[in-house]
Image 1 (cartoon, rainbow, N blue to C red):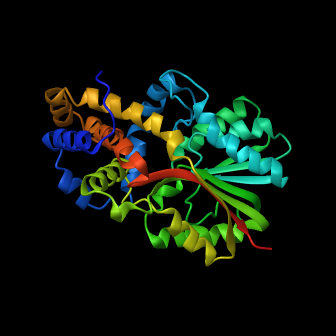
Image 2: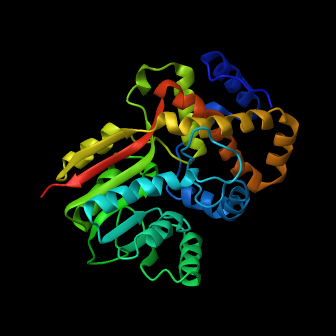
Length: 322
């Protein structure tokens, strides 16, 4: 597998290669429908989880470690451990995870904090079923999971929390209305002085000033992740300031996530050498067509993150004012 640097020239080459296989203009100009995200994950999530867990272990969000090894590692534990630090410093007793997936972060934290009650929500029934089964099998008595939309937070009616967090889930709130609905609900579900922690990818604040090629890389990556437009950090800050939150932390983790993105990019570059096989798979298999979104995201995310030009990764911590 040829190792190349992330440069504008290499990005131009990669975009040309992708153009041979995909109608990129159509991809970035076609909005992601309201039900497409759920349909996409319902179609591929079981297979993808099983495959990736062979190489990476549990917890399928981005690996944060330098360097990022291919085989099983502790890199995916970094994000929940960052949340753990906030839980311990703030003496939290009740925590809600948004977009909990199959429960990895919630269950890890539940083991480390047996006196804290942890609850998790996700929009996918199959994710919540796996999370419940795992908690039951391992006797996690301080966890509870439910199917729920982040824009309503109605799964645990009448309950409030000391901390609400999300790892790579709120990027799917890809318009102002969704984000406002979520922040409004979160403000009602947090106790006074409670925290909202967002660990995610964001459109960079410098997006409009970067090159057209890097902007295209970001738009392709967003569509690969089934997102119309990732929010910027400033968008979250604006929504939060309108609803009685103040910013306590803005941590840039782009350098920490970039090795993982580069690893995925190198794999994608290798796969893209097999143009004929990719075309055949796309024609023969509906699942392969959906999986091509993963290929697009893998091929372009690292380019988007280069020099934080079009994308960045980080943690925002917002606190409810007393």
